Length: 415
Ligand code: DSN
View 1 (cartoon, rainbow, N blue to C red):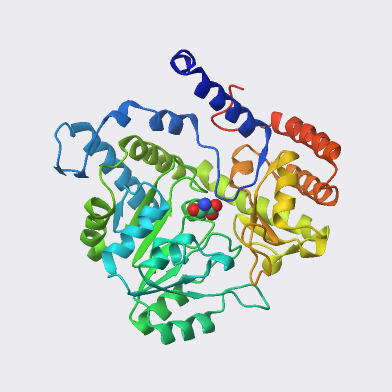
View 2: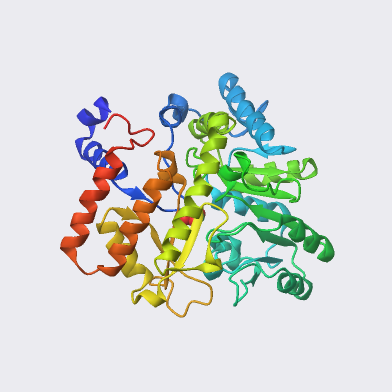
């Protein structure tokens, strides 16, 4: 970043500080990761100079000889990796991707049915504060009060009651594997389309350690930067019969020109995700989450659904005597970064809920395995019990930094 150092030392210095932060902390935000140097290079390439509204062979501006090939390669790689009939790689991120699906199939006021936000749904699945909840009649299903799991009988009944045009599965804070076949059956019973937002677990699907929603869903949306370990972007995968509606909804419906540098970086990420080493990575992500869950439960932590089958854990801290925000703040000071999170039927407010969410994609990318995960669980346990002891938090941060220094993160090996 020599040019930036000369041209804009302030931003240069801030990015360097962020590099240090990412290198020295245990990053457990379930939706974050470390991308490879190759993906960073594509993201920061001269493709950022190009405008390319439209699709390959049908652009509004000229000079698309190279960009068309890049976008077609990204699409081919996504189709091959996920077995999809049609893929659009242009959405800027997950929220615009989901908006495009609604635009493709809905009119304002139509009914959608998604998981309630406090139960692990995403903002764009119909939360009242989101356009998805303001422009549509957004109905929601909740998790079972006893088990914390999806209750398919209740979802079926809700679908019959509200008759949605779209049912949304795939969630942001659900530690279990949804049954896409049952969601398909429910959608068929009420004449709805099935949309699966696989943003969180796309990398696990790519790595073959999570069932794929692609055979069951009319449309699958995903970000590319979570467990899939690509750049900040998104894709929409769909059946061929929906291809024209989806493409038209992305452009010109929701967006203008695609970010070609991101498209190239998505293509690189998809190549990486097709490798055998990515299969090993995905398997280790799940193994690490499972070990972290077991180790925390042994220490008296209450995990929603008593464990995990994917990359994330949701912990209710009520029995530990501190809130999710208090825990997340203390852990951050101790070098362990995660987010506070509502738990199902939470009695606390969303900004200071009862739980914390953590995931293993990023720490697995830097090579943490079972031994390090046990160490992480011990750090978390100790911090939760000493959350007001600033000196203890500082000492833990030093231990965290030492552990991290033995596991250089992808893209940050130069530090
Ligand atoms: N913000 C993401 C998450 O953390 O789950 C979802 O978009």
